[in-house]
Length: 104
Image (tube, rainbow, N blue to C red; front, side, top):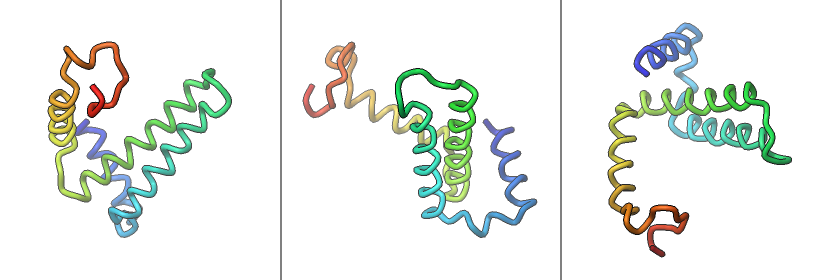
């Protein structure tokens, strides 16, 4: 993802958009784009794959920018959170179930 990250950073710098990328604005943008992704499934399970991919890309784009703005390594925080989820959802209790961790 480093190549994508650098391309996104360059894109934003060339347009002088970093000034608008506060953590609060980025959190709002992530939520807005996630809503647009959800909209692709608004009326059922059928979807336009191209539209879904574009909205998914928008969500990931803003996540990459937010991680950069916060000065965190996105891969590192993802793996840290995955480790927490591994502990909260042990295979022997969670396999094949969609129960929340505190109800396992």
